[in-house]
Length: 207
Image (cartoon, rainbow, N blue to C red; front, top):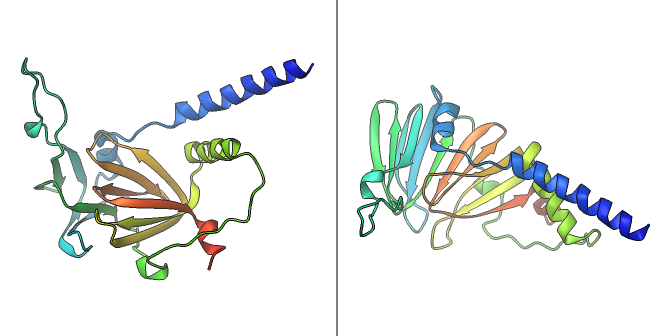
């Protein structure tokens, strides 16, 4: 009977993992383009001290790896490894590589000044198995998002921007060195930045 319960638990767990895996898909450059078609976007690039270098705004966005900078192997086959991104906003184009960059949909607000630049966290909640907690968190990511705060830093660790939302879900992308997030159904694209994503209640319980 005990073995049977263990097997049933294993099958149930496997089913949840499979279901979650089916939902955890990346966001392709095409999906990003479709998401923001006709919407206002702002692109900001930053130096290593998190100072704004430039700001570009416009409607609609297309961003992709610039394949012209892919290296090739000895047989001339592309390695698909370019770190250069090609960005089109409206009818204008910019090519970018190197410095930190944030692309945000209109409707997202940087709330950097509302949170401390450094975060110290002590969690008193020791209940539950860490593995199961992690599984539950992944399940929430897949289906509904979570109340989260995203603290973004430049590549040398200087605080740069902060965003928060009631429904926050991260996605992998096919754009090099980037992460896409949907924050209350608004797109945020982070390129070449350090960042940490916190459950919102974890920060608030330490204020």
